[in-house]
Structure formats: C-alpha cells, structure tokens
Amino acid sequence: MAASRLVALALCAAASGDVLSAQSRLGVFAADTNVGRATGSTSYDPQQQAYVIAGSGQNMWDTRDDFHFVWKRVSGNFIVSTRARFLGTGVEAHRKIGWTIRPSLEPGSAHVTAALHGNGLMSLQFRRKPGAITEEEKSADSLPDGAIIRLERRDGVYVLSVAQVGDTFVTQRLAGVTLPDTVYVGLFVCSHNATVTERAAFRNVHIARPTRQSR
Image (tube, rainbow, N blue to C red; front, side, top):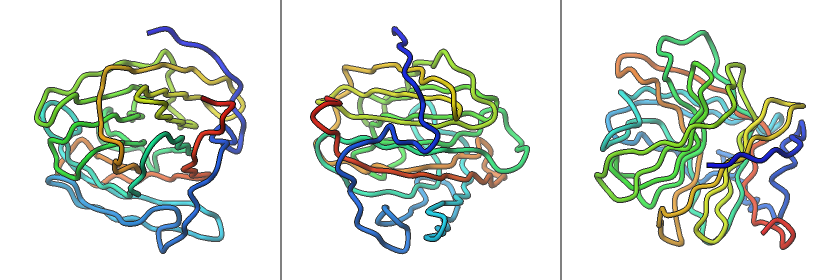
C-alpha cells in the first residue's frame, strides 16, 4: 500500500470541513460503552476540549474485540482527527488506542480501526464481515510518543494519515471493506490485558464533513 506524505499541522487542522459540533457531556460524542468483556470510563474537560479515556480488554484482534469506546453515530463521508498519547508506561507492548468505525457495538462487528500500539506501531486494522478474522495494514511510521491520527471515509475508501506534531503525515488507503452508510465512530482504549486498565489522553478531537476540495 503506497504511502504519500503531507504536512501535519500542530493543531490537527487537517480535519478541515463542516464540523459536526453538537456538544454533550462528552463533547462531540453521544455516549461511551464497554464493548465485549471490557471495563472503562471517559472524562471530558470542556475548557481544554480534551478527553481522558480508560479501558481494559483482552485484545482487539482475531474474531472479537474488547475495549472502552466513546462514540457518535455518523452517516456518509467524514473526517475524524485527534492528537493521542498513552498515559503511563503501560504493561503490554500492544495496548491500543485510536479511532474505530463500526456498524454495531457487538465485539465481533465488522470495522475499520486506526490503532496506535504501545510500542509505537501504527496500523489500519479491519474486519470485513461480522465474526471474520481481523486483517492489518501497518503504517510506515513508528510513533512511540503519540501521534496526530486522522481517519477519513471517502466514498467507501478509508484514508489514514498519521504523524508526530510538526512532522509530515504518512498516508495509506484501504479499499474493499464495505460498511453501512451510518456507523458508530469514536475513540477507544484497549489494554491488551483483561486484568489491566490503561489510560490515554486525546486532544484536538474533530469530527467533520469533508470539504469539496478534500474529496
């Protein structure tokens, strides 16, 4: 999968477009949920427009996922972006945080997920059908200190762009995964260890409609 490079803006301005800005106790999101066999919590600071999300969960892999999820239902094309980092040294190298797009809240749901791992690995993970085996396309970038993570749905194609602040975006595309028009979109934390709860911080969180120029 070819990678192209774009300039990363420090304030996640890459998610330009018409912002879907309905505010709640969870900011741009509607609710938070434990998916599968996981526990967790979400706190939102409206002054800082920042989230701290905690989550456990054995893994997000194979035929099922366990994680804490804060989400919004979105239809059509959209761009989501955030500046994300783990809090604390962690226990598992493959603890995961990032964005996930799913038709349902079932642990075996089909999905497209932008997953930042505790060891710096960044990847697009996806499940084509409910209960199918998870597949993965790894990013060329390694991001052990956190990242700006931008994920766009563009007429059925998913475009992941990642970078450290002030660096250039590394971009990859995923086609051939069919999800319905209306999906759950949001941030997640999975500890990769059912007995452990991990925490992550997310700033500059945006959910937007793409402008005509970005299509």
